[in-house]
Amino acid sequence: MNPASQSPFDSPTSQTKTAGALHPSVEYGLANMILGNDGPEIKFYAYTHKSKGSVRRLKALFAKKEWMMGHSELLDDYLEGITGNKAATGFKEARIVPLEDHTPDADERVFTQYHYMSDSDLEEEEEESFQREEACTTESDGQNRMVSGADDDARLNQTSAAGSSRAVQEKVLEQSRRIGHAVILKGHAFRTWTAFIFYLYTDQICFSGTKAPVRRTRVPACSAKSMYLLADQFGLPELKSLAFATLCTQLSTKTIVKEVFSHFTSWHPEIQDIQLDFLFEHLPEVKQDMDRMLHSICTTPSAHCSVVLQKVFGRSTSAAARTKKREGKISSVITPVISPPESAAASAETTAAPAPQPAVAPGPPSIPQQANQVPRPADAVAQPITPAPLPAAILPLQAVAVAQASPAVAAARSESTAKVAKAQSLSSKKTIRENGTNAKFQW
Image 1 (cartoon, rainbow, N blue to C red):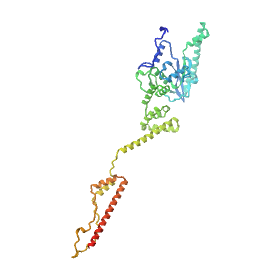
Image 2: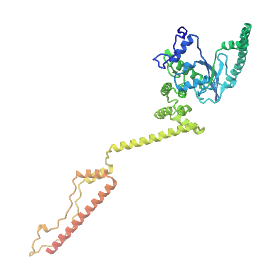
Image 3: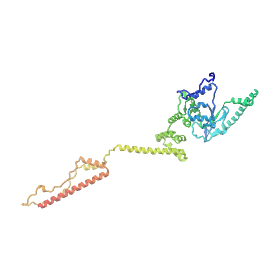
Image 4: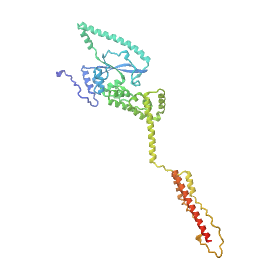
């Protein structure tokens, strides 16, 4: 190849890029566009509005396949399907069309099987307004086709005047138009897809509801949830992480109940866990919203809501069990200080009073001593045996100990004390009887 005929821009050989630089495929495409060798070859159609269970109002945006490739294998596979690669799995419904003149068919302008009807990137629209504008659009499309056909005939007549054959005329007509591929997107909104293409080109993303710096005000914004769905579908983990981080910062007590029970949350367990954590942290603040949501679920049951309810009740049960277990651990570590009850204190005061002396059993009647009778020794007189009373200082402590002891221990101690007292009483009576017998014999 003649070096003079080569493009001054080489094709990209590496997919690496420095901070702030464009993707290599974008740089290469821009270079070719400057030279006039290339232009957009894909015309995407995406819906902009929703109403009564359907999406509508297709709007076109243009893109270059090479600029969108190189970010993930799955996305590259979809893009290859646009150009007719039979081995590809996605976008096989793409059609070859004249990019400027093509418009979708009437039956394609309304789609009733859009899976994410709560997509905030779709605008709400009234049915009457759509029908009036649809009638105007149909009439305008017919006029445009008539004008386009007249322009084509004019080109053919000019070529015929030059004496060209019919085949040459058709070739000239084809070259006068940009031919590309048209794809109707049935899973993502126009706003989401616009921000997605901009991200693939520039590596910049802006989500709705966030404060963007001044230098990024021209970056097209989209819903973080909508972009999370798109990034998950096409295997873009970096973009998915950016959307996830934004969703975490947008959690609010005003919307958390609605978000937890939404279809979007039920599709992504990782987001559901984050939202449930936030819900239980602010449960007292959202109690009324929870009551209303439970009433709504009972009135109109939904399959995805039943799964969420199972997780909510499961967490509630687990939280109660953890609280009970934690309280049990605390009570086992801390030994409670038991103060004696009022009855025990009163008993202690009563016991501390001087103990009354036990009554002495009466001895034999005194007999007048006769002159010839030997006097009885002093130690022969019967002396009653009285158990020594407990010191007064010990009695309150004993009452407190009994109060702190368990009922079984207290009962055992009372029974033991009664047995000791009974034994002492029998011993005293036996001694008195023996002393009385000795005195009788002496008499």
